[in-house]
Length: 403
Image 1 (spheres, one colour):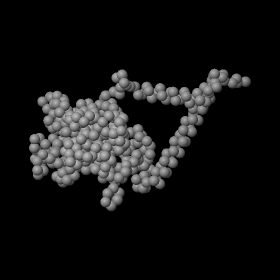
Image 2 (cartoon, rainbow, N blue to C red):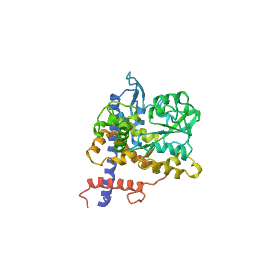
Image 3 (spheres, rainbow, N blue to C red):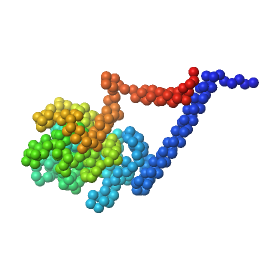
Image 4 (cartoon, rainbow, N blue to C red):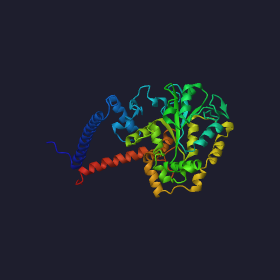
């Protein structure tokens, strides 16, 4: 007669069976959820944007960047503001998609043809210093209007074409500025139109500096107040940001090319994915670290071996005297809360950019993640520990009475 296995052995077998059943049920639930999500998505959106392969690709992209899995989020459409006609979907992979004009930030250099750096210049984010540093410290050729009329001639080392206006960008496109080889970097505050200077065989490799939205708004207000004193004599910053003269969430709107109307969480998610996939992310609060990364990333060569000494010179000159005189808006104050609320999507994007800044430091530049004490974090070890604790908690929930 075969004896029954000892109690401890039966206990272990029971736990293994329970865990196996749990995994099987989990797979069934996941499959049902994916089916339900794709089904809902197909009813919410146009069929040409939500075919099954496209939906799966979008879910994979959302997972890749650690964002919420909502199928609709990536199906943001670029449309004609006058006719309402849908022009392109950011979920499309056809060559006409303007995002294909920019190389993915982690892609090898010149993998698909020629490349030129693209600096998306966000207002009040140390852009003036960055432009001077590129020109004088690393001898990079760029375009900026210096004299009238514009021309394909260099003035003080800068090509006399205006890439900071729509008219100038149109002229730059007509003259085929990118393919001309006259510039090493395109600088523009118009993300979409600047991106259209490139093409899938001569792509842009983008970077930007993100400022804190509250301080950026304050700096912009003080700058305009100084420039147009009569217009702002009786308008304080609280009134200005609630008026039609102010454009809220400027960075998100620029990335998704929607400069008017209400924004939603869907628009924010698209902006986050564009930022994560297409940009080397810089933070204006950390200009030296950002510039060191850009030098490594693009392979810029110092002028006379004094690039970083030169860089420090121009950064020291870039002080916001207006903000220093007025004093920064106090964190947590009523004005702070108002500016944060008005720019809530830019605020969310900024904090996401801080995460990207830390992540890219590791993935692109070999900077290790560290804890508050400066000790490198072993994420694989933490994940293994977390998974172990989850499994133990799950098993214990079924055998709480066992001894």
